[in-house]
Picture 1 (tube, rainbow, N blue to C red):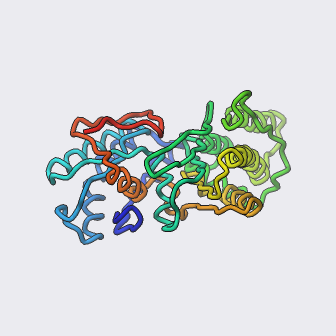
Picture 2 (cartoon, rainbow, N blue to C red):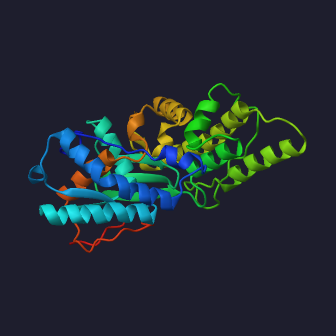
Picture 3 (cartoon, rainbow, N blue to C red):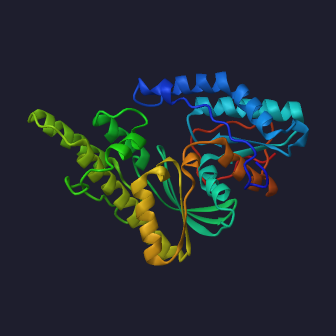
Length: 323
């Protein structure tokens, strides 16, 4: 990455085929695949960018949150690379990286703005006050939106990655064929809850099976996606009312969902505010977004020592131990 905005190379080693047979990510397999591929991926990325290590300013790495085994592979490799090359190491929060994917795709985007970050493990409404200054406005109290979509897709017989395949299967479905609730968290209007929705879709499928009925996957999928997106958009509107921001950002793996992108565009057009969404190739996990956020962490002086350790959980507004 150059100056937090320009991608010089972006190399991804996908593990999707390894996990399809299990219906989801198996942490041990993910860690092993990271170990086997990380050196080659970095070498190809450097070669594609036509760079030598003495031309770099720092090494950025996802240090939290996530699957601890996979994180440890990345952090260990980054520390070795930093030590051998004499470069400073810059720890990056995973969710901050997802938000930064929009800096790559929208060179004119600058804080402050309100962001909705939705992925398999996270559903957050965040006020981005500055490039390294974040305030959590709302979050899920149980399941994340991405997890709720993945589990529903698996119950409908769709392969991993469930959320993406459910989006495709529901494209021509009737989103009013099935009724789903819109759960709320008492006393916390900006927080999300998706466990009840997930339970209802499983009950709907089980009830149909017991009666010997066939469930329409396009209709059930479309209805379910609508309910999930309704919850996301309603909370986003409340957050925008509170912040008064004229810019709204969506990020994370679920930001690739076609219904969410369409509904977000409609909401922003109605409110006459600007919408920023990452290109589809930058919605899922990727190193470019970590490099983008890493630039802003580095220029803010946020480096770490070789004692840096990975963390499975960490708040987006928390700081890594300083060097």
